[in-house]
Length: 352
Ligand code: FUC
Image (cartoon, rainbow, N blue to C red; front, side):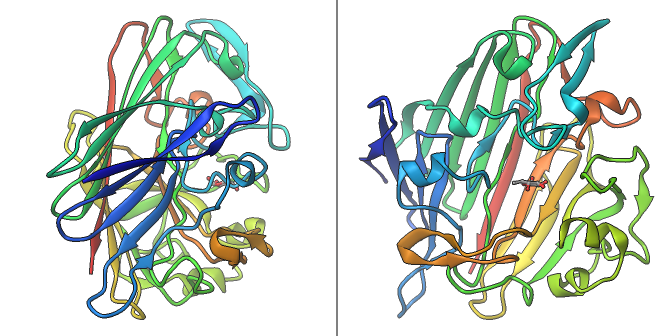
């Protein structure tokens, strides 16, 4: 089932729609036409009120004035491009610099701040909506007029399937993701430290102090990034490893072992689980990397229903091409050639 309502208005009066997708198992999701933001994700319990497993805000204004990308679609390029420098087919491009010296999450007016054109695709079984956006040539410095579409489908097996499609008139780079902050004990339940995660990744991409990859692929074995077996988030957060100290927690790209550039089938990559609620989340993707981020700098952020979000209160699993891949030729390439069709899919499955 899908219900549609008005969530609010942009400063120029554009109406922001809210779509509530509910499947026959009672899982329900609220998605906004602003940034494709996943605002609520409710998991039913037999006797108790449902658990809302994502962080979010209650107004358009709160989303526009925040820089944490809560629940949003991120593009054109998730994570950082060093100094916003891009060279494609021997041409240099300067991208918008919006964090330190770098371009973060597609620049200051990225996909998360755009109003997407929304269409309901299926109302009954497996409710689905499509969000579309035309990003003009030169948007945030990126070359090529880009047409993109994202389809959200809530399946009857409790998977949220997010499919990304794009074509560009000129050769460009494309690396979309979703920036949901999960807390499987509930968005307002304090830190995720005691929750367990697994990431099927044998390597990670270490960074400098400004979160730009050094270019190396390092084995996770013996580091706080070894999540090949289910382990607590706290184990990593309390580590004295310099990579953890840089960002006050996890903010790293792990290289997914099952990545197959030839395949369009989402493969199992990661899992999180809360012993408090017995809710688990599994992530499947076609992308090569996953940014594991623990909301490291949240400090009394005022969230939904007067909640306050603190450091380490959310966990992001951002599937992606590796950060700064346009400047790291040894990383899988995010180049999208003129006229070529881009497709990727990430699925978040909730078990409860
Ligand atoms: C993640 C991180 C960044 C940033 C952002 C909001 O993707 O890699 O460091 O803080 O989210």
